[in-house]
Length: 389
Ligand SMILES: Cc1ncc(COP(=O)(O)O)c(C=O)c1O
Image (cartoon, rainbow, N blue to C red; front, side, top):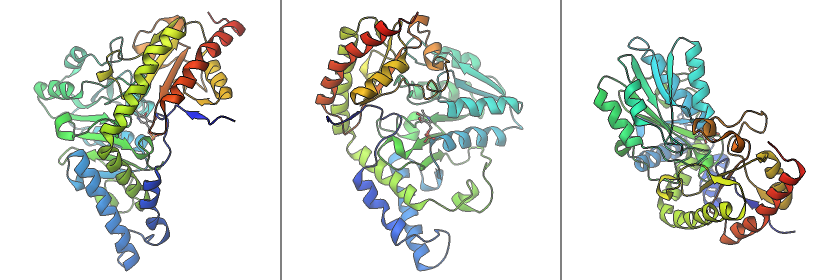
């Protein structure tokens, strides 16, 4: 049997063996509770401190501005609720975008049920947030703006530095958060250059372990802890520390940072071949997200086929040996079209036919050629079987 081809690295990635090696001592020998005082604990504490320093150095912040979390979802929830609750006395208005991950959108909806006002900014046809809408939405009661750095469905890289400038120009005390879960490991991240006060990342998106994430919170940002108990993470996030997870996250981030240029050169070559060839080979296809490669994640190619069920294409591809996604994690369980494609104004006849191919370090140009050879027939077969629309 031919090797399976995994093309869903935006969902998750395999753990790099070098990351596993770095984590192992913290599972087998230095497994003590990092907050205790004996030798086993001191070893664990050293590993945790070192991991925090590494993450801080790569993001361009201070170690005490990093809170380790259980992943991207927790980091996003903690950022939004932490700032919203701490700022409640000054204002009740939050601004985000229509194309955020559900970790942000559902946290915002929960805050709306608790009395906050939320503005969901529109995007253009390529998924880029409209900065004029941001400027128009800021008001005296705005305490928090949350705009993702890169979109998980269509790979669009948002103009964060310009957005941060627009927020600062308006004046007042507005905290600026970004969900950098898809961008971390793929793009250089410097919290000062981006102009953000909070930033979320998740290790499993860049060849680290699942269940390990981090939230950067700039000093003096209003912040109310959302998990209480022990005094870990400077009482901003209680609970015995996941030392192996933090070490895994830091090691994976370091490797991604050091190897970024080489990894991205390979990914971009494969991505651009997909972006050029799929619309040429499959009739009735559009590229979704930015056409300009500089505004897309290096590993992300996304499409929509007219008059076809994307889920049927995914099942067909699975049978042929390819793991791919429709882009939106929720479409498997629901018949709702992707909120991202709807916000982008993608025409109705394409809305259910999305395909997201996200590449990783394990892919080769041979994988791309195999996919390009298989996809046109797969789509044609589905169209013949169940002519949708
Ligand atoms: C943009 C974005 N934010 C947040 C998350 C959630 O991260 P996690 O799965 O680590 O909780 C994801 C995961 O798909 C994502 O793509």
